[in-house]
Length: 204
Image (cartoon, rainbow, N blue to C red; front, top):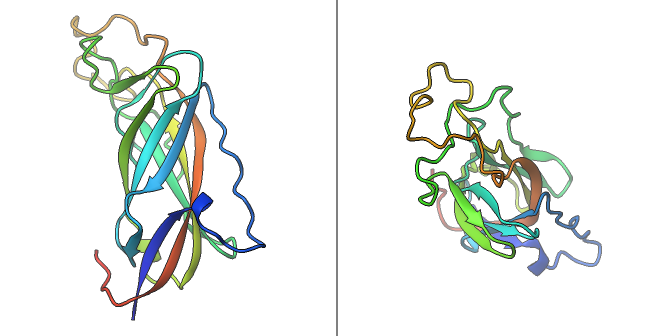
């Protein structure tokens, strides 16, 4: 019998009388980030897919990155940590790079945003995140907790690149920032993975 992975948002999954509640979500500089699985069950070793929601809980409009990835080179990164029921780290993110990524996040047209999304107070923006979970191929049946950590470098011009194309292009905006691009890092909510028996074969 093969195993499959069921991902359930912690607040809707009853772990028993001894279960501990996850720490409350805190927002930083107006931003709050939530993750949720895009489907209920996953085969063992299958790629995990999450819906990521960004909420502006602050009093002012902010700009957030339009895309998100798990790689260390991503300017808008959402790293994932997986812990088993005994508190052992199953999957942890590699450390951030010491230098900025090689990108230029200025917009050529102020009202036709390519890299950023404007979030008014109270507004929400949603995107998807894909996480390879091969570290769970041989995971024993049980409970696993997932928590994300979002990090944005904010406005970048060139990063660590040398002679980055377009840095002298007059069609680019003059300033390095509109003053609203969000920069910082914060934790997401927590979701719980339940691994149970299955007759399905794992996908790679």
